[in-house]
Length: 469
Image (tube, one colour):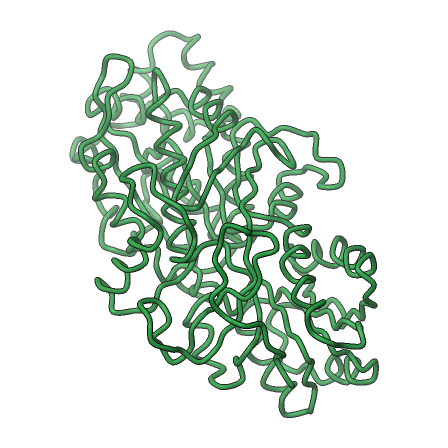
């Protein structure tokens, strides 16, 4: 359990520790805060907002005191900097630094006749859903966050979104299949009519995975038997429910390897099942370490599908290093790249410019998470800057719900759906291949766009080839 006033999170780049704008240098007792709350009606109102909890009332009053004194808006960012999902966060510190350097975040903004400064606090979930919920709570109740951003898989996004919806805190989620996010909030992805007041998300969903993967399958000659590796977790269960109908509609036969638990170490029985059904197509959505284990065992045991399309794994260069040559021509989805024709709404910088800046400043290969992290802050900034009072959570949340913005991750239209508060982005089909000379491909292994069926604006710069000839 968290105790009020005991900060849990720590930013990856050294910010967010200690006081917020010096506010904590003046210690306020619970009695002082309650006395300062004013009339009984104000106390009851705050109590209703936070479900009657005294600690929540104290935290809300502290937030108002801090805001009145500093007019600083706090944006909390929640991501998995360590643990099994850490590859998703490799570029987060860079993206956040790039956002901090923009005029809007470095100089603040003016609205409603007042000037507001912005502060970003980044915290680590350690790839643990329970901790994701705890750090979200800490950001809001102890560290004064006015809006939260959550990124990278349901294990991160769902607990944060759930907390924000209950507590009435605006929240932007990304890098999570929208069906998994929507179901995590209590909605029905098959009948997506329910609206959530404080949450929005941008990414793509199962139909887009199909629109990305299946066109690649059709271009490779196979027996149309598909091996499915779907774990017993939020993503796996969403894929198991929604992907087979797409597979069958395209004329393919799915073979489910079984709802295995995350962290499984031996996949021999699954591999044997795929081999016995002569599966020549492969699709998955496991945790990255689980796929690495599976794929190495598959190679050892002679399971070599002609085309492998993977979700949630091999999205980033760090994933590739663990497999080495075994990664050759494995296909995955790409939701952002330097080849995408997108620009920042904060600076006008292109996707190519941002990726090149990342490579020059870090010495590392670009990663597609740069774009989604950066774009989430674009969304948050737009909602805050267009509010007459950016401290009014309900108004900021309403701005999120009605937003349409051109971002570094493309056009994000939260009014269009497929569900209330969901903005879809396209995905391109890419394969990992040995690198070649070029700004963004001169690495041992590089990601090449080989199919743009779902993202026609993306230029193709590589040939689709069988994973295993």
